[in-house]
Image (cartoon, rainbow, N blue to C red; front, side, top):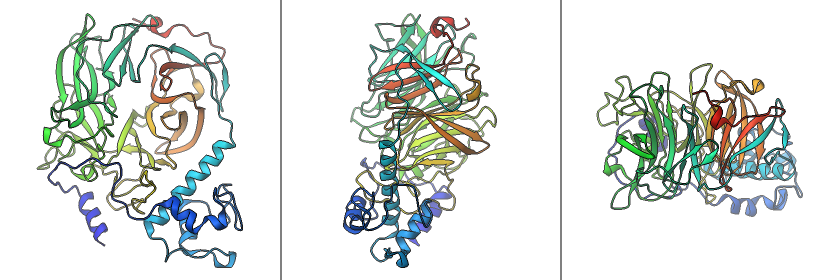
Amino acid sequence: MALTSLSRRLALCTVAICVPVFAQQNPPSKGRNIPELYTEKCASCHGANMEGGSASGLVDSRWKYGGDDASVARSIRDGHVDAGMPAMREQLNGPEIRGMVIYIREKDAAYEREHTKYNSPTPGLTVQSEKQAFKLESVIDTGLDTPWAVAFLPDGRMLVTERPGRLRMIENGRLLPEPVRGTPAVYGGEGGLLDVVIQPNYSKPGHDWIYLSYGDKTPGGLAMTAVIRGRLRDGAFVDQQQIFKADPANYRVGGQRFGSRLLFDRKGHLFFSIGDRAAPGDEQDLSCPNGKMHRVNDDGSVPKDNPFVHRPGALATIWSYGHRNPQGLSFDPVTGDLWESEHGPRGGDELNIVHPGHNYGWPLTTYGMNYDGTPITDHTTLEGTDQPVTTWVPSIAASPITFYTGSRFAAWKNNLFVGALAGQELRRLEISGHSVTHQEILFKGIGRVRDVIDGPDGYLYVVLNEPNRIVRLVPAGHESVNAISSVVK
């Protein structure tokens, strides 16, 4: 009852005082270690690796009593005595049962990976996907240090952010040896220099702004995501203006979960995401910037129609809240909806449609559990919070997303592409209205996918870490030209 009351109060946007919280990897646990519980209570029947023993296996995707999450949880909770499955309701609490479902999903996914051959292309190798044969071409394969994001300038040059704090330039297919001078100092860990976008109508006089998000630090070692803009002049980042910087009281300790993605809409508003900075509770507090989606005008001022602009104590820049670590943003070219991807905990990565003023639940609701194997909650839904369009359990570490709007891949028109870090994969999602109707893994295991963008030449550009490089997808049989020099000027 107490949890429900708290959830309702937070869902109704009650503003609290944002106070410093020591960063931690996990929210408070609601139970015992799930893998240990499985070994103790389940392995003797279902096998140590869930491949079966005296009872059936749990990793062959054949479920006699239903294989969706609710059915599996019900089987664990209530049992099937006639089939020899005892009820576990007296031995496991609700969050622990939810954690057991997540653990089963993890093992099932690992089993599938071991028994499935995924495309893992090298440059020049033709890959036949469901709707399109394509090849990978190298754009830059040496000289980069943890590239995070890319953006094209109208003259064909390409900007690349490197997490250690450098802004690099690719010109005529070559990575220039010297980084752009004068970019802001950055905080490390999962922070650093993050996303880069250019202002719409960049070629028009007075619109030649470049926007950067980064981990900003205080002299005391605390940090928060910030946004700055500047102009490129003779290899330097000049005329700098701070677009967003939180009050120093809102900065947090530790190097976790900064977000961040930047995106302009057609009206010139800048959307940006800030991760929760591993400070549980801040995500539901409208006086804190972290765990939120924000919207500002191109100069950093606050639009008058932002949802909390008249809410006393709330940050006027907030667009939505209850996010964990959002790292993907893209507008649906058909509906105009703003889509967002975010890292969940262990399990529970989310794909959301973001609406102004809405609460996306974290950490009150989640489809995942703590990384140490302890459960967080069995609440996957709560009144006053929005449900994700889809989730990935186990986590793929969903990061960048982009809707493809180019002309090179006709069969992929308006599909959503999702990159994954831990999964080292690029997924193609078919969208109908507000639903994902189909997913395809285009490739897997060639590097952590940090960014994916729809290039001005119609190709898909992918930024990879481990190894650090930039590649592009081109249709098989097409003789692609160097995109850096072929963009219309």
